[in-house]
Length: 114
Length: 140
Image (cartoon, rainbow over all chains, first blue to last red; front, side, top):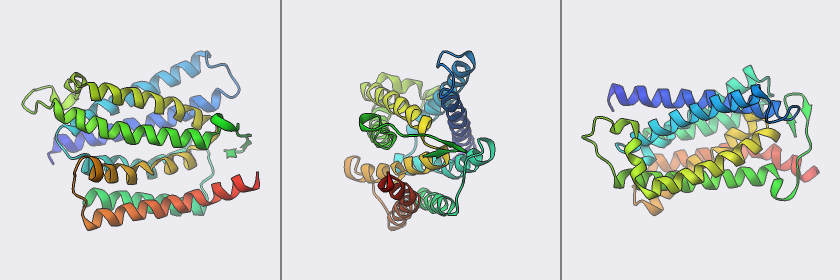
C-alpha cells in the first residue's frame, strides 16, 4: 500500500465519521423542528457531501484493492463514532456497549490484517 | 429506547427502527458487492483520475449500487431519529462480517483462518451489543 492510498483511506474514514455525527445531530433536531428548518437542511447537506466524498474515494480504492481487504478499514469507524457520539452528542456508553464495540473493532482489525 | 436523556417510543410495523436498521444493512451488503464487481469491470488503473473513482460510474452495477446506497441512507436517517448512534452504529457493523462472507461466496475471494477469526469476533461483539436491545424489546 502506498502513502497516497493510506492517506485516501484516512480521509475517507474521517469524512464518514464526521458525516455520521452531523446526520445524527440533524435527525435529533428533526424531532422538535420541521425538516425544512434551515439549520437541519444545512446539517443534512454537510452530512451528504461528506458521505459523497467518502463514497467516491472508496470507489477509487476499490479499483486497486480486494473488497474483503479494503472494507474493514472503515470498520475502525466503530470505535471512533461510538466515542465521538458519547463525547459530542452526550449519548450513554454502557460497559456492555463498550465491550461489544471493542470486540467488533478487534474483529474488524483482525479481518483487515489477515 | 433512550437517546441521550430523552425517552422515545418506537413506531411498530414497517416503521420499526430495528426493521429499518436490518433493511439498511441488507442494502449496504448488496451494494458493496455490486460496487466491487462494477468498479473492477471498468477499472482503468493507468488513468490519472482513476483514484477518484469517477470512471466507476460507467458501470450499470455501480449505478444499481448507488440506488441501494440511497435506500440504505434513507433507512439509516430514520434509524438515527429513534436509536442512539452509540447503539445503532456498532449494530450496523454486522455488515463487516457479511461483506467478507459475501466476497467469499459471490466474488470467489479467499478468506484466511485469521479472517475467519475476525468475523467470529465481530459476531460475538454484535451479540454483546445487541443483548440489552433484545431484552428491552422483550419487555415492551
